[in-house]
Image (tube, rainbow, N blue to C red; front, side):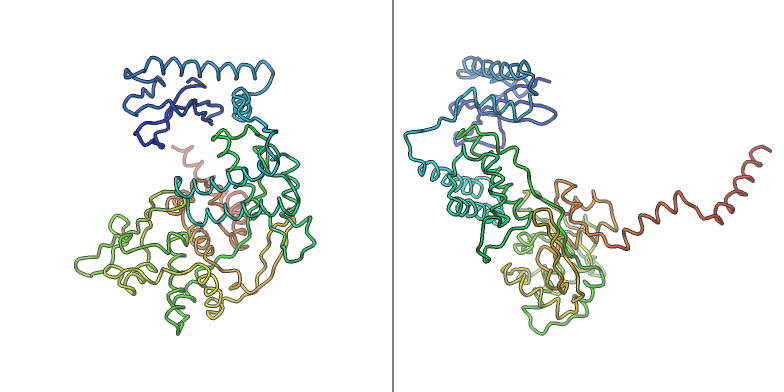
Length: 465
């Protein structure tokens, strides 16, 4: 298979129903795309995907000559890297490509503030593009906006000129220290934990990639910025606590009852709050037995079908007893779903109070990493419960009952590594690991003696036959 070839992006269509043509460079089963020209596009019907060329149509010969020329130019750049004893990685080839195009030109005639303003304005454009074109979730857009505000604060507090060519290694370490509170004497400005910092580094890198594709710079240093994500410590509810919350706790306030039911519904489906709070009766496929009128639990007959906002996937959630109970309680087949619709701030505040009233008050410790150091906080368990607890509880409960690939099918996680971070292991479950080794490898002396005669008899039988 050719390492360099021309392709079109079928997921992106222009207003005239044509697609831009890109150079695709593949290395170690990963690839990077380089846009050839904004003025060169082709309809899908006129594109030969196997050959990577335009079929017979208007100007096809001229366009194909350009494509051949561009492929040869990129191939030559790759050979140049190899001659210089540099590995032709995606990072190195990308840098060589933009270096050859000489895209980034320092404009010395412009004042420094103009460059800083352009950088931050480009970040705002990035947010708008993600919202309007890529249709990312509102929660993700909020994190982009928070990162932009952090960059603005960093620029002001540290008097650091932010533009594309100042996103360097020195910037990275200075920004990390700033987010960790290393430069602040203001006690009101709290130091961020490692996972919060990780989101800002992730968003900054996404923006730099976005601007690189827009040909606004050729600074590749940002690709070396390391993420600070660590496995998070969190709380989940066990089966007994869910039963206590749903069956034993009787809230007098109907609003608190609906919030309680929403929480249990989330624990039973594993849906994110953003998807849960927008469910309608149209998402529910319900079939009842003709005689008993009971809802079928067979996923072919009854399930919840959800178009996940974050991953753009369609998930099929099987029906269980908790879901069936709420379908009947709220007459979901005939009424619009109102009990799931809550403001997330109100929900997170009230669910803590509800769980406290339900008796989920065991004191526990939760640790977070601050500059790789674990910081422990001890509170009543109810104080750590939030909308995120629903999804984590769902995954943790399923992990003890089914394969992780089955969980992935209903959780919507694309990466099993991320999914495994949602599983909370307790001491009892971890102790079963040593039990497994004992059962398989280390039989007791009594069991070994018991096994020997059986083997002897078997061998004798075989010898006689």
